[in-house]
Amino acid sequence: MKKALYMLSEFSDRDFDWLMNAGKRKNVPAQEILIYEGEPTDAFYLVLQGTLAVSVEAMGGEEIARLGTGEIVGEMSFIDSRPPAATVKAVEDSLVWAIPRMKLAAKLLQDVEFACHFYHAIAVFLADRLRGTVSRLGYDQEHPPNDDESNVNPQVIDNLDLAKARLNWLLNRLRGS
Image 1 (cartoon, rainbow, N blue to C red):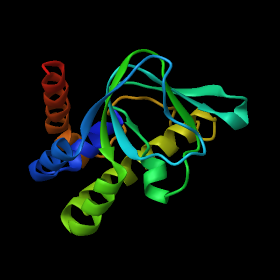
Image 2: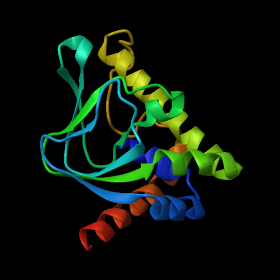
Image 3: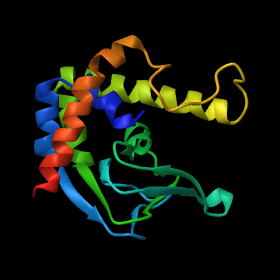
Image 4: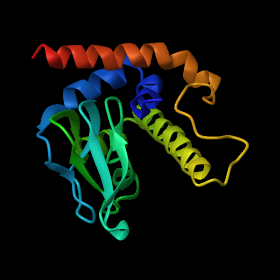
């Protein structure tokens, strides 16, 4: 499942409006690095279009993942305030929604309801990512990894239609501008 849907399914309309007003469209040309491993990043990103490659220097710069439309980038560094653990580079011309780190941090401090929604969404999709990693490494033979909605908490599924509508609205709005 697209990780942004976890976030968008948790947010109220007011939260979503804030994200739209606080963020900005950023074009990322093919081969441009969006996030450098070990260097602080200044934004939290939602991939709107295109493909990004994730690589880790400790593995010789080998690509370990690809991220596409609806994925979140930069969430780990935002949460733990440590430099990114990987480099993220555009494989093709891509478009992201960039939410400045300082704006997001200030909003989280000032708006308890928004903070609850944000941190719950981050926790859910980081838990999902960890489960997927454990399964891919072969530690969870009973639950092989999949990217469908069959293993998702029913409460999250209830909100997915709204989350998908929000993501599609944002994509359509940006394509028109």
